[in-house]
Image (tube, rainbow, N blue to C red; front, side, top):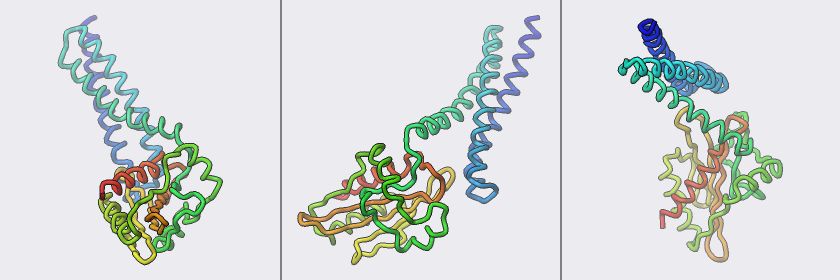
Length: 249
């Protein structure tokens, strides 16, 4: 009876391992395949979600079967079960973190340091007019949500004159690895595009440098081309940019 249980456990571990690995590969390919145009990003999200469900089930089976194998001193099989569980967790945990983030941030995708007069897209305007999220700013509709969720997103005040501040702003933008689309010193305007790693989403950024009595003011706006919620990406991007700007001192 024990030998039969060991054989069943061994088979379950193997099956669980195969399914878990396939689920992990499927989840990993969802983004690149969406970027390649094989399916829409929405379909990619569905594929990721179901890959997580399948990986969770297969990982649980492998863990239980591995425990049975360990009790029978079949340590190699037990080790495979543990490794499979780790692979499953590598699929589950990031997805869980994303879901957790989605529940904690507002469903907005346009973040700016100036909600009263956000920097406008100029060079990127033709591109943004063709995207689902467009170039417009929705005003109080999202300004209130942004201020509640990201109160730290504020203009950057510099003591330097606009010409110096512009060069610092441009250097910081370049250090972010963005594609610089326009840098017009006379207008104090920098426009760029950032591409996310996994699904290769395009988000557009516009930076505005304006003179102030005591130096210069820098405002930043980051807006996604697709999707209702950016999962906090644009706010994180602006924070990272402000840190990069501070590092140019």
